[in-house]
Length: 450
Image (cartoon, rainbow, N blue to C red; front, side, top):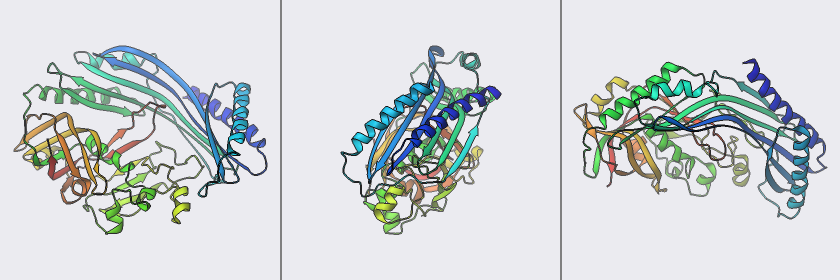
Protein backbone atom coordinates (compact mmCIF):
# COMPACT_ATOMS: atom_id res chain seq x y z
CA UNK A 1 0.00 0.00 0.00
CA UNK A 2 2.95 2.33 0.68
CA UNK A 3 4.26 1.73 -2.84
CA UNK A 4 0.78 2.41 -4.26
CA UNK A 5 0.68 5.74 -2.47
CA UNK A 6 4.16 6.65 -3.72
CA UNK A 7 3.18 5.95 -7.34
CA UNK A 8 0.00 7.99 -7.00
CA UNK A 9 1.85 10.86 -5.37
CA UNK A 10 4.39 10.90 -8.19
CA UNK A 11 1.70 11.25 -10.88
CA UNK A 12 -0.22 13.82 -8.85
CA UNK A 13 2.93 15.80 -8.06
CA UNK A 14 3.99 15.97 -11.70
CA UNK A 15 0.51 17.13 -12.73
CA UNK A 16 0.67 19.86 -10.08
CA UNK A 17 4.12 20.97 -11.29
CA UNK A 18 3.04 21.14 -14.93
CA UNK A 19 -0.10 23.08 -14.03
CA UNK A 20 1.81 25.49 -11.81
CA UNK A 21 4.32 26.32 -14.54
CA UNK A 22 1.84 26.55 -17.43
CA UNK A 23 -0.78 28.57 -15.56
CA UNK A 24 1.93 31.05 -14.57
CA UNK A 25 2.60 31.54 -18.28
CA UNK A 26 -1.00 32.36 -19.25
CA UNK A 27 -1.65 35.83 -20.57
CA UNK A 28 -4.14 38.42 -19.46
CA UNK A 29 -7.64 37.55 -20.62
CA UNK A 30 -6.86 33.85 -21.04
CA UNK A 31 -8.84 31.23 -19.14
CA UNK A 32 -7.13 27.84 -19.09
CA UNK A 33 -8.22 24.48 -17.68
CA UNK A 34 -5.99 21.40 -17.50
CA UNK A 35 -7.70 18.04 -17.08
CA UNK A 36 -5.70 14.84 -16.61
CA UNK A 37 -6.88 11.32 -17.33
CA UNK A 38 -4.56 8.40 -16.72
CA UNK A 39 -4.31 4.74 -15.87
CA UNK A 40 -1.97 1.90 -15.05
CA UNK A 41 -3.91 -1.19 -16.10
CA UNK A 42 -3.25 -4.84 -16.74
CA UNK A 43 -5.27 -6.52 -19.48
CA UNK A 44 -5.49 -10.29 -20.05
CA UNK A 45 -7.46 -11.81 -22.91
CA UNK A 46 -8.77 -15.32 -22.29
CA UNK A 47 -10.06 -17.78 -24.88
CA UNK A 48 -11.02 -21.39 -24.14
CA UNK A 49 -9.89 -20.71 -20.55
CA UNK A 50 -6.34 -20.00 -21.64
CA UNK A 51 -4.32 -16.80 -21.64
CA UNK A 52 -4.02 -15.60 -25.21
CA UNK A 53 -2.70 -12.08 -24.68
CA UNK A 54 -1.51 -10.06 -21.72
CA UNK A 55 0.10 -6.71 -21.05
CA UNK A 56 0.19 -3.59 -18.91
CA UNK A 57 -0.90 -0.19 -20.21
CA UNK A 58 0.45 3.02 -18.67
CA UNK A 59 -1.06 6.13 -20.15
CA UNK A 60 -1.55 9.75 -19.14
CA UNK A 61 -3.52 12.19 -21.30
CA UNK A 62 -3.80 15.91 -20.65
CA UNK A 63 -6.64 18.01 -22.06
CA UNK A 64 -6.10 21.76 -22.43
CA UNK A 65 -9.17 24.01 -22.73
CA UNK A 66 -8.38 27.63 -23.61
CA UNK A 67 -11.00 30.39 -23.61
CA UNK A 68 -10.21 33.90 -24.84
CA UNK A 69 -12.90 36.54 -25.42
CA UNK A 70 -15.68 33.93 -25.50
CA UNK A 71 -13.80 31.81 -28.01
CA UNK A 72 -12.81 28.29 -26.99
CA UNK A 73 -10.33 25.74 -28.33
CA UNK A 74 -9.33 22.36 -26.91
CA UNK A 75 -6.51 19.89 -27.43
CA UNK A 76 -5.56 16.54 -25.86
CA UNK A 77 -1.95 15.40 -25.67
CA UNK A 78 -0.19 12.35 -24.23
CA UNK A 79 2.36 12.77 -21.45
CA UNK A 80 5.51 10.69 -21.04
CA UNK A 81 6.11 11.14 -17.31
CA UNK A 82 9.35 13.04 -17.95
CA UNK A 83 8.74 16.51 -16.52
CA UNK A 84 10.89 18.69 -18.77
CA UNK A 85 9.80 16.91 -21.93
CA UNK A 86 6.15 17.10 -20.94
CA UNK A 87 6.39 20.79 -20.07
CA UNK A 88 7.74 21.55 -23.53
CA UNK A 89 4.94 19.50 -25.09
CA UNK A 90 2.28 21.36 -23.12
CA UNK A 91 3.83 24.72 -24.03
CA UNK A 92 3.68 23.81 -27.72
CA UNK A 93 0.06 22.75 -27.37
CA UNK A 94 -0.78 26.08 -25.70
CA UNK A 95 0.88 28.02 -28.51
CA UNK A 96 -1.18 26.04 -31.04
CA UNK A 97 -4.39 26.71 -29.09
CA UNK A 98 -3.69 30.45 -29.04
CA UNK A 99 -3.37 30.40 -32.81
CA UNK A 100 -6.60 28.41 -33.23
CA UNK A 101 -8.75 30.31 -30.76
CA UNK A 102 -8.07 33.63 -32.48
CA UNK A 103 -9.67 32.30 -35.66
CA UNK A 104 -12.85 30.94 -34.06
CA UNK A 105 -16.21 32.73 -33.77
CA UNK A 106 -17.51 33.77 -30.36
CA UNK A 107 -19.51 31.17 -28.48
CA UNK A 108 -22.60 32.81 -26.92
CA UNK A 109 -22.94 30.01 -24.35
CA UNK A 110 -19.32 29.52 -23.37
CA UNK A 111 -18.81 28.76 -19.68
CA UNK A 112 -15.64 29.91 -17.98
CA UNK A 113 -13.78 27.55 -15.62
CA UNK A 114 -15.20 27.73 -12.11
CA UNK A 115 -12.89 28.92 -9.33
CA UNK A 116 -11.89 27.98 -5.80
CA UNK A 117 -13.31 24.45 -5.74
CA UNK A 118 -11.00 21.89 -4.16
CA UNK A 119 -11.30 18.13 -3.68
CA UNK A 120 -9.07 15.12 -3.26
CA UNK A 121 -10.21 11.49 -3.19
CA UNK A 122 -7.71 8.62 -3.13
CA UNK A 123 -8.89 5.01 -2.74
CA UNK A 124 -6.40 2.17 -2.90
CA UNK A 125 -7.47 -1.48 -3.04
CA UNK A 126 -6.02 -4.95 -2.67
CA UNK A 127 -5.75 -6.04 -6.30
CA UNK A 128 -3.95 -9.13 -7.65
CA UNK A 129 -0.46 -8.18 -8.75
CA UNK A 130 0.03 -8.35 -12.53
CA UNK A 131 2.49 -11.24 -12.17
CA UNK A 132 0.02 -13.14 -9.95
CA UNK A 133 -3.27 -12.40 -11.72
CA UNK A 134 -3.25 -15.40 -14.06
CA UNK A 135 -2.49 -17.72 -11.14
CA UNK A 136 -5.52 -16.37 -9.29
CA UNK A 137 -7.83 -16.63 -12.30
CA UNK A 138 -6.92 -19.77 -14.23
CA UNK A 139 -7.49 -22.63 -11.72
CA UNK A 140 -11.22 -21.92 -11.32
CA UNK A 141 -11.61 -21.76 -15.12
CA UNK A 142 -10.44 -25.32 -15.69
CA UNK A 143 -13.18 -27.51 -17.13
CA UNK A 144 -14.97 -24.46 -18.51
CA UNK A 145 -14.90 -22.89 -21.96
CA UNK A 146 -14.40 -19.26 -20.93
CA UNK A 147 -13.62 -16.24 -23.08
CA UNK A 148 -13.24 -12.77 -21.67
CA UNK A 149 -11.15 -9.78 -20.73
CA UNK A 150 -9.50 -9.14 -17.37
CA UNK A 151 -8.80 -5.47 -16.61
CA UNK A 152 -7.25 -4.36 -13.36
CA UNK A 153 -5.32 -1.43 -12.01
CA UNK A 154 -5.46 2.25 -11.17
CA UNK A 155 -7.29 5.18 -12.73
CA UNK A 156 -6.31 8.83 -12.23
CA UNK A 157 -8.30 11.98 -12.83
CA UNK A 158 -7.18 15.53 -12.12
CA UNK A 159 -8.27 19.09 -12.84
CA UNK A 160 -6.54 22.44 -12.27
CA UNK A 161 -7.62 25.72 -13.82
CA UNK A 162 -6.66 29.38 -13.95
CA UNK A 163 -9.65 30.32 -11.76
CA UNK A 164 -8.15 28.46 -8.81
CA UNK A 165 -9.92 25.09 -8.75
CA UNK A 166 -7.83 22.02 -7.96
CA UNK A 167 -9.07 18.41 -7.91
CA UNK A 168 -7.50 14.96 -7.71
CA UNK A 169 -9.09 11.51 -7.88
CA UNK A 170 -7.52 8.03 -7.74
CA UNK A 171 -9.23 4.66 -7.57
CA UNK A 172 -8.24 0.99 -7.91
CA UNK A 173 -10.59 -1.58 -9.44
CA UNK A 174 -10.77 -4.83 -11.38
CA UNK A 175 -13.23 -6.54 -13.71
CA UNK A 176 -13.49 -9.85 -15.52
CA UNK A 177 -15.98 -9.49 -18.39
CA UNK A 178 -16.54 -13.08 -19.49
CA UNK A 179 -18.74 -15.54 -21.32
CA UNK A 180 -19.08 -19.29 -20.81
CA UNK A 181 -19.80 -21.43 -23.86
CA UNK A 182 -21.33 -24.94 -23.86
CA UNK A 183 -21.15 -27.73 -26.45
CA UNK A 184 -24.28 -26.38 -28.18
CA UNK A 185 -22.56 -22.98 -28.52
CA UNK A 186 -24.98 -21.36 -26.09
CA UNK A 187 -23.51 -18.68 -23.87
CA UNK A 188 -23.82 -17.24 -20.38
CA UNK A 189 -22.41 -13.75 -19.96
CA UNK A 190 -21.33 -12.20 -16.66
CA UNK A 191 -19.04 -9.60 -15.15
CA UNK A 192 -17.13 -10.12 -11.91
CA UNK A 193 -15.78 -6.84 -10.60
CA UNK A 194 -14.84 -4.95 -7.48
CA UNK A 195 -12.07 -3.20 -5.60
CA UNK A 196 -10.54 -5.54 -3.01
CA UNK A 197 -9.98 -9.01 -4.49
CA UNK A 198 -11.74 -11.94 -2.81
CA UNK A 199 -10.92 -15.34 -4.30
CA UNK A 200 -14.04 -17.06 -2.94
CA UNK A 201 -16.35 -14.46 -4.51
CA UNK A 202 -14.64 -14.93 -7.87
CA UNK A 203 -15.04 -18.69 -7.71
CA UNK A 204 -18.71 -18.33 -6.74
CA UNK A 205 -19.31 -16.10 -9.78
CA UNK A 206 -18.00 -18.85 -12.06
CA UNK A 207 -20.05 -21.49 -10.22
CA UNK A 208 -23.25 -19.47 -10.59
CA UNK A 209 -22.58 -18.91 -14.30
CA UNK A 210 -21.80 -22.62 -14.74
CA UNK A 211 -25.16 -23.53 -13.19
CA UNK A 212 -26.94 -21.32 -15.73
CA UNK A 213 -24.86 -22.82 -18.53
CA UNK A 214 -26.00 -26.34 -17.60
CA UNK A 215 -29.60 -25.20 -18.00
CA UNK A 216 -28.79 -24.12 -21.55
CA UNK A 217 -28.00 -27.73 -22.50
CA UNK A 218 -31.74 -28.35 -22.75
CA UNK A 219 -33.39 -27.87 -26.17
CA UNK A 220 -34.32 -24.25 -26.87
CA UNK A 221 -38.01 -23.42 -26.50
CA UNK A 222 -39.65 -21.35 -29.23
CA UNK A 223 -42.30 -18.96 -27.95
CA UNK A 224 -44.57 -16.87 -30.12
CA UNK A 225 -44.47 -13.07 -30.27
CA UNK A 226 -46.74 -11.51 -27.70
CA UNK A 227 -46.97 -10.12 -24.18
CA UNK A 228 -45.50 -12.23 -21.36
CA UNK A 229 -44.87 -11.94 -17.68
CA UNK A 230 -41.15 -11.36 -17.27
CA UNK A 231 -38.37 -11.00 -14.77
CA UNK A 232 -35.39 -8.94 -15.94
CA UNK A 233 -32.28 -9.48 -13.83
CA UNK A 234 -30.01 -6.64 -12.71
CA UNK A 235 -27.67 -6.82 -15.74
CA UNK A 236 -30.63 -6.43 -18.10
CA UNK A 237 -32.06 -3.54 -16.09
CA UNK A 238 -28.66 -1.83 -16.27
CA UNK A 239 -28.81 -2.15 -20.07
CA UNK A 240 -32.20 -0.42 -20.07
CA UNK A 241 -31.03 2.37 -17.76
CA UNK A 242 -27.99 2.98 -19.96
CA UNK A 243 -30.33 4.33 -22.65
CA UNK A 244 -31.44 7.06 -20.25
CA UNK A 245 -28.12 8.78 -21.03
CA UNK A 246 -29.10 9.11 -24.70
CA UNK A 247 -32.15 11.25 -25.53
CA UNK A 248 -33.04 10.71 -21.90
CA UNK A 249 -32.52 12.51 -18.63
CA UNK A 250 -30.66 15.41 -20.24
CA UNK A 251 -31.94 18.93 -19.60
CA UNK A 252 -30.72 20.02 -23.03
CA UNK A 253 -32.66 17.17 -24.69
CA UNK A 254 -35.68 18.13 -22.61
CA UNK A 255 -35.47 21.80 -23.63
CA UNK A 256 -35.10 20.95 -27.32
CA UNK A 257 -37.91 18.37 -27.34
CA UNK A 258 -35.57 15.43 -27.96
CA UNK A 259 -35.98 13.68 -24.60
CA UNK A 260 -37.87 10.41 -24.21
CA UNK A 261 -39.02 11.78 -20.84
CA UNK A 262 -40.78 14.84 -22.27
CA UNK A 263 -44.21 13.46 -21.43
CA UNK A 264 -43.23 13.42 -17.76
CA UNK A 265 -42.20 17.09 -17.85
CA UNK A 266 -44.91 18.42 -20.15
CA UNK A 267 -47.90 16.24 -19.29
CA UNK A 268 -47.08 15.30 -15.72
CA UNK A 269 -47.03 11.61 -16.63
CA UNK A 270 -45.60 9.36 -13.92
CA UNK A 271 -43.94 5.98 -13.74
CA UNK A 272 -44.56 3.36 -11.07
CA UNK A 273 -44.14 4.44 -7.42
CA UNK A 274 -41.83 1.40 -7.16
CA UNK A 275 -39.29 3.11 -9.45
CA UNK A 276 -36.73 5.60 -8.12
CA UNK A 277 -33.47 6.58 -9.81
CA UNK A 278 -30.70 8.89 -8.62
CA UNK A 279 -27.25 10.09 -9.59
CA UNK A 280 -25.30 9.08 -6.49
CA UNK A 281 -21.59 9.79 -6.00
CA UNK A 282 -21.43 8.66 -2.38
CA UNK A 283 -19.61 5.40 -3.07
CA UNK A 284 -16.64 7.39 -4.43
CA UNK A 285 -16.13 5.27 -7.57
CA UNK A 286 -16.32 8.25 -9.95
CA UNK A 287 -15.03 11.81 -9.46
CA UNK A 288 -17.71 14.40 -8.73
CA UNK A 289 -15.84 17.14 -10.59
CA UNK A 290 -16.20 17.73 -14.32
CA UNK A 291 -13.87 19.22 -16.93
CA UNK A 292 -14.67 22.76 -15.74
CA UNK A 293 -13.77 22.02 -12.13
CA UNK A 294 -17.42 22.09 -11.06
CA UNK A 295 -18.53 19.68 -8.32
CA UNK A 296 -21.86 17.90 -8.66
CA UNK A 297 -24.05 17.33 -5.59
CA UNK A 298 -23.39 14.01 -3.89
CA UNK A 299 -26.95 12.87 -4.56
CA UNK A 300 -29.40 14.04 -7.23
CA UNK A 301 -32.94 12.64 -7.27
CA UNK A 302 -33.82 12.12 -10.93
CA UNK A 303 -37.00 10.09 -10.54
CA UNK A 304 -38.49 9.55 -7.09
CA UNK A 305 -41.38 7.12 -6.62
CA UNK A 306 -42.20 7.42 -10.31
CA UNK A 307 -42.16 11.23 -10.44
CA UNK A 308 -39.60 13.18 -12.48
CA UNK A 309 -37.68 15.44 -10.10
CA UNK A 310 -34.58 16.61 -11.96
CA UNK A 311 -32.73 16.19 -15.22
CA UNK A 312 -28.96 16.30 -15.57
CA UNK A 313 -28.04 19.87 -16.42
CA UNK A 314 -24.63 21.22 -17.44
CA UNK A 315 -23.64 24.83 -16.94
CA UNK A 316 -23.70 25.34 -20.70
CA UNK A 317 -27.32 24.18 -20.90
CA UNK A 318 -28.15 26.33 -17.87
CA UNK A 319 -26.74 29.39 -19.59
CA UNK A 320 -28.45 28.67 -22.91
CA UNK A 321 -31.92 28.04 -21.49
CA UNK A 322 -31.87 30.08 -18.29
CA UNK A 323 -32.22 27.14 -15.90
CA UNK A 324 -30.24 25.99 -12.87
CA UNK A 325 -27.21 23.75 -13.36
CA UNK A 326 -26.43 20.70 -11.25
CA UNK A 327 -22.96 20.54 -12.85
CA UNK A 328 -23.44 17.53 -15.09
CA UNK A 329 -20.87 16.86 -17.78
CA UNK A 330 -21.50 18.44 -21.17
CA UNK A 331 -23.07 15.25 -22.55
CA UNK A 332 -25.48 15.30 -19.57
CA UNK A 333 -25.13 11.54 -19.27
CA UNK A 334 -25.48 9.39 -16.17
CA UNK A 335 -22.19 8.83 -14.37
CA UNK A 336 -23.26 6.86 -11.29
CA UNK A 337 -26.93 5.89 -11.59
CA UNK A 338 -28.44 4.06 -8.63
CA UNK A 339 -31.92 2.54 -8.79
CA UNK A 340 -33.65 1.89 -5.49
CA UNK A 341 -34.19 -1.73 -4.44
CA UNK A 342 -37.59 -3.18 -3.58
CA UNK A 343 -39.11 -6.01 -1.56
CA UNK A 344 -39.01 -9.04 -3.86
CA UNK A 345 -36.73 -11.61 -2.22
CA UNK A 346 -34.27 -13.48 -4.46
CA UNK A 347 -35.66 -16.88 -3.44
CA UNK A 348 -39.20 -15.78 -4.37
CA UNK A 349 -38.46 -14.52 -7.89
CA UNK A 350 -39.42 -17.65 -9.85
CA UNK A 351 -42.57 -18.30 -7.81
CA UNK A 352 -43.62 -14.65 -8.21
CA UNK A 353 -42.98 -14.87 -11.95
CA UNK A 354 -45.02 -18.10 -12.10
CA UNK A 355 -45.22 -18.48 -15.89
CA UNK A 356 -43.24 -16.27 -18.24
CA UNK A 357 -39.69 -15.40 -19.28
CA UNK A 358 -36.63 -14.97 -17.07
CA UNK A 359 -34.12 -12.64 -18.79
CA UNK A 360 -30.57 -12.60 -17.46
CA UNK A 361 -29.29 -10.13 -20.06
CA UNK A 362 -30.51 -7.91 -22.88
CA UNK A 363 -28.49 -6.94 -25.92
CA UNK A 364 -28.27 -4.49 -28.86
CA UNK A 365 -30.59 -1.93 -27.25
CA UNK A 366 -31.74 1.21 -29.04
CA UNK A 367 -34.65 3.61 -29.11
CA UNK A 368 -37.36 2.54 -31.55
CA UNK A 369 -39.52 5.59 -30.74
CA UNK A 370 -37.89 8.31 -28.65
CA UNK A 371 -41.05 10.37 -28.13
CA UNK A 372 -42.94 7.30 -26.98
CA UNK A 373 -40.07 6.07 -24.82
CA UNK A 374 -40.01 2.78 -26.71
CA UNK A 375 -36.92 0.60 -26.52
CA UNK A 376 -35.99 -2.30 -28.76
CA UNK A 377 -33.35 -4.97 -28.30
CA UNK A 378 -32.66 -8.68 -28.16
CA UNK A 379 -32.94 -11.37 -25.51
CA UNK A 380 -29.63 -13.16 -25.30
CA UNK A 381 -27.37 -15.10 -22.91
CA UNK A 382 -29.26 -17.30 -20.44
CA UNK A 383 -32.88 -16.34 -21.01
CA UNK A 384 -35.36 -18.99 -19.88
CA UNK A 385 -38.99 -20.05 -20.10
CA UNK A 386 -40.58 -20.55 -16.68
CA UNK A 387 -43.80 -22.44 -15.89
CA UNK A 388 -45.38 -22.50 -12.44
CA UNK A 389 -42.18 -21.21 -10.89
CA UNK A 390 -39.91 -23.81 -12.52
CA UNK A 391 -37.37 -23.18 -15.29
CA UNK A 392 -38.32 -25.34 -18.27
CA UNK A 393 -35.41 -24.47 -20.56
CA UNK A 394 -33.78 -21.70 -22.61
CA UNK A 395 -35.80 -19.67 -25.09
CA UNK A 396 -34.72 -18.94 -28.61
CA UNK A 397 -33.32 -15.45 -29.09
CA UNK A 398 -36.11 -12.93 -29.67
CA UNK A 399 -36.52 -9.23 -30.28
CA UNK A 400 -38.46 -7.08 -27.86
CA UNK A 401 -40.02 -3.65 -28.32
CA UNK A 402 -41.65 -1.97 -25.36
CA UNK A 403 -41.90 1.43 -23.69
CA UNK A 404 -40.13 2.30 -20.47
CA UNK A 405 -43.41 4.00 -19.52
CA UNK A 406 -44.66 0.41 -19.21
CA UNK A 407 -41.45 -1.32 -18.10
CA UNK A 408 -40.91 1.09 -15.22
CA UNK A 409 -44.53 2.18 -15.05
CA UNK A 410 -47.80 0.34 -15.59
CA UNK A 411 -46.20 -3.13 -15.98
CA UNK A 412 -43.82 -2.89 -13.03
CA UNK A 413 -45.11 -5.36 -10.45
CA UNK A 414 -42.15 -5.72 -8.07
CA UNK A 415 -38.49 -4.80 -7.60
CA UNK A 416 -35.95 -7.18 -6.09
CA UNK A 417 -34.22 -6.59 -2.77
CA UNK A 418 -30.77 -7.37 -4.17
CA UNK A 419 -29.17 -4.37 -5.88
CA UNK A 420 -26.07 -5.30 -7.87
CA UNK A 421 -23.21 -3.24 -9.28
CA UNK A 422 -22.88 -3.46 -13.07
CA UNK A 423 -19.55 -1.83 -13.95
CA UNK A 424 -18.65 0.01 -17.11
CA UNK A 425 -16.10 -2.28 -18.75
CA UNK A 426 -15.33 -0.26 -21.88
CA UNK A 427 -11.67 0.42 -22.64
CA UNK A 428 -11.70 1.84 -26.18
CA UNK A 429 -10.31 5.23 -25.20
CA UNK A 430 -9.00 4.13 -21.81
CA UNK A 431 -10.42 2.01 -19.01
CA UNK A 432 -13.77 3.53 -18.12
CA UNK A 433 -14.94 4.51 -14.68
CA UNK A 434 -18.46 4.20 -13.39
CA UNK A 435 -21.18 1.66 -12.94
CA UNK A 436 -24.93 1.20 -12.70
CA UNK A 437 -26.30 -0.11 -9.42
CA UNK A 438 -29.73 -1.63 -9.77
CA UNK A 439 -32.00 -4.51 -8.76
CA UNK A 440 -34.04 -6.80 -10.99
CA UNK A 441 -37.65 -6.06 -11.96
CA UNK A 442 -40.76 -8.24 -12.22
CA UNK A 443 -43.14 -7.22 -15.03
CA UNK A 444 -46.75 -8.18 -15.53
CA UNK A 445 -46.27 -7.70 -19.29
CA UNK A 446 -43.24 -7.60 -21.60
CA UNK A 447 -43.64 -7.37 -25.38
CA UNK A 448 -41.69 -9.83 -27.54
CA UNK A 449 -42.09 -8.98 -31.20
CA UNK A 450 -40.25 -11.61 -33.28
